[in-house]
Structures are given as C-alpha cells and as structure tokens.
Length: 163
Image (cartoon, rainbow, N blue to C red):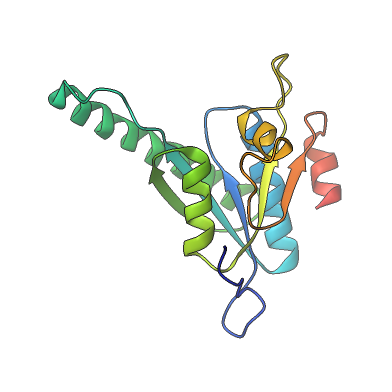
C-alpha cells in the first residue's frame, strides 16, 4: 500500500521520477520527465540505483567496489543534472539508492510523497524494451503511481512537443 500522494497539497508540488542508469533510453526518459516538470511547474527527481555486488567473502574488494559504484553514481547524476540545467533550466533532485532496482524505486516513491509520475523509456534492443518496462508489462513491478513509457523511436523534438 502506497502512502497518499501529497503533490496537490499546499507547500507541495508534483514531481516526475526518472531512473538514471547506463542505458541509452534513460536519456529520453530524463528529457521527457524534465520537460514535463518544467512545463507544469513541477519537480524532477533523478534516481540512480546501485545493484548489490556479490563479493561478501572478499570484504576489501567489496568496499572498493561499493566506493567505485558510489563515485560512478555521483558522476553520472552530476552529468545528468547539469544536462537538465543547461537544456531545460531545471535543477533536479538526485537520489542514490543501493539494492534491487525495482524495490528501490518503490522505496523512493514511498519516501517522497510528492512523486506522482514515474517516467521510463522503452529500449530498442532485440531482447525487449528493457527490464523495468518489461516488469510493468508483466505486472512484476506494479508501481503504485502512474508510469509513462516513452517509445524508443521518438526524437528529441518529438519528446519536447509531447511534453
């Protein structure tokens, strides 16, 4: 059960959530979410999820891997944030979480009751639209808020026109 959304209450605003990762489609999701936030007076939240490693028996290696993953997450989010500032003039909130991606997206939505829409983009790979988009199609994720899926064939101009 998800907490009641508060984005329409006084002192709150609707936020669009985009997942940032190393897939090419995340750029389209981020652009759409940023444009929608900007055009509607809302906010943009960028979340980067660090998947758990499997290095429990090599504690020193695990600590190094975690530190490197955190540095990569911070650098990726800094680059994405700067792109949104330059392109749209919006300063996104950034969130770094560690764990299973779907579970961590659910947790981010639960913790920030202003997040009202999750924006994903479908991939163009032969093996499907991507794990998050596939999970909503199969009801494996069942996100508690509306999900907007950006088709893989949309250009930047088309995304801007739609948002």
